[in-house]
Image 1 (cartoon, one colour):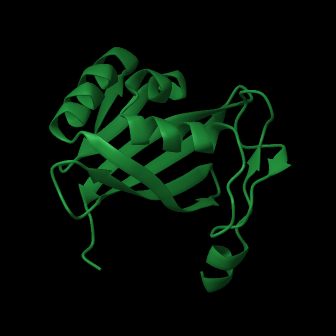
Image 2 (cartoon, helix red, strand yellow; image 1 turned 180 degrees about the vertical axis):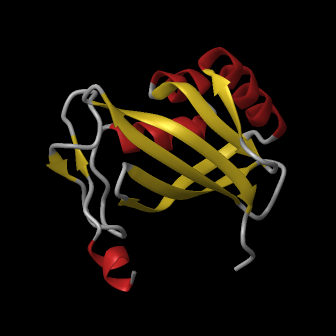
Length: 144
């Protein structure tokens, strides 16, 4: 696990693709362009449409409760409700790594109504050559 966190390298496709082409810098260094950056920026802005553009036809979402599977239309409503309740200040990915079936990312989401960030977990899987956002999990952040 220590080695994973120190040596993780993600790959991004140039020009709107997902994770498979140019190396992204190791954590703690400058991030590359592409899907990961787009998702990070979309959470920072509360940009539901960009998140849904990257999403699978059905997305599993959990906001402080057990997850449920939503269509993109339903996910639009859930995410809009979340961003209204927790207007974003910024979102920063803390970690991301490849799993046996896709990519997993973890980030901190600061909102205007709280001092402590919320923890957001994301899961991506590849389908038909395109990386899709499959799961969004929101939990209370850890006090540091």
